[in-house]
Amino acid sequence: MGRTKYVAAGLLILSVMAAAFTYVGRDVVQRPESQPPSQTQGVIPGTSTTTLSQAPGRPQLAELDRLIRSFQAQTKRSPSSAGFAFLGQLEIQRARLTGDVDSYAQARGALEAATRLAPEDPETRALLASVRFTTHDFTGAFELATQIYDDDRSLSALAVRGDAALELGRYDAAASDYQVLSGALPDASASLVRLSRLAFLQGEAREAARLAALAEDAAKSEGSFGASRSWFAAYRGRLALDAGHYDEAADHYRRAVDVAPDYHVAIAGLASARAAQGRTDDAIRLYEQAVAMVPEPASLAALGDLYTLTGDDRTAADRYATVEAIATLQAVNRQLYDRQLALFLADHDGDLDQALSIVERGLETRRDIYAYDALGWILYRTGRFDEARRASDQALAMGTADARLWFHAGMISASLGDDDRAREELSRALSLSPTFDPLLAPEARETLERLGGSV
Image (cartoon, rainbow, N blue to C red; front, side):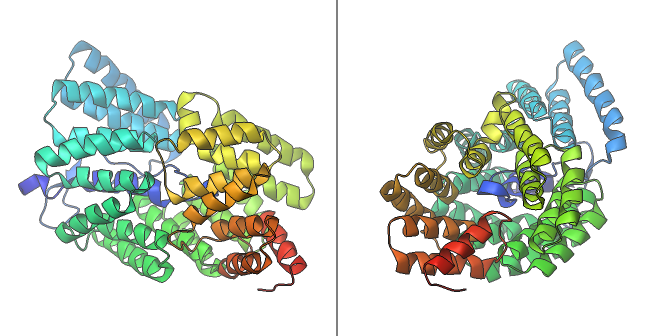
């Protein structure tokens, strides 16, 4: 298959970095993107591949803006597929660096223009599919990636299709695509980290951690550096955090920050580890640093919770207000942060009707386990306990080792008077991660003690 077989490594990494990074509500957050096609080097030995993007330092933002203006003018004067494709990738870079999600919409427009001029270019089409994925058009990403793969057997398209299937809750389809991908590129970081993500969802936390370590080593050998390399360390931090290994998580996140000091995902991750360790002041400082770079709603909500924990209700209220402002700023924000917003409303005395409407609308297309978890939790908050149980059971179907899932299930069981099951589920949540949330973990412990259980 030549160059099609050995696809651009950046395209292979694109969507998995969104899917695998999880914060509140297990929703998508930003991640490194691919470099423009003109900047290539052999990341996978013996192949011609596009390099993974390295997060530009924030002082480089002015240069990035200059390049965008230049290519906007150039494509206006002399439209070309290559020019639009390059412009699209520059817009992706800006979105990642600044948190301006409207840049993703600009990227999508530029890439759509590129594909109109060169409809047979599989890599540009695969990049467009990845941008659809990033903006939570998972069905659109899946359909376009399927078309590309059927036409060209493009592994980058196969990777995006697998990632989209994972978010759509089509786990068997995702596993099948990932097996084909790993068969073609068995030692590639892009393959290994996808298998890790799938293993985590399937309840195989140790296997997920093992594969994540191999993925980070592979990324190093592929020449990854900056934010791209930092991402793999931060992903390992997330897995360690979910497993309740807080010191290990902090070590991974610390390494991620050392590799890319301006990478807000790594900084926010380190903040979450410090919060779990009980180092609240350090966590607040780090979260403030992260949201100053990119005001991502999950980080703002976590920051507000820490201020609540310290008794600073006024500052907490300010951070909470910013969550809703950012999440609903424009259409693309609402699409990206819908699940985060729904869970935020459920956990902070917000509009439960709005939260339920958001989740039910999302379930029309996105039926992964976290969609059912969010539905169950919001139904619980509204007092619809039987319906909540049914949704929660679907969220637990694969035995995913995520303390929040088991906490939600335990509280629902307690509300139904099923004390034995509630004790088991709450014990599992706290055994997995004793301080999984600064406000909810104490609630789990208090409920478990009231029911006569212990961790």
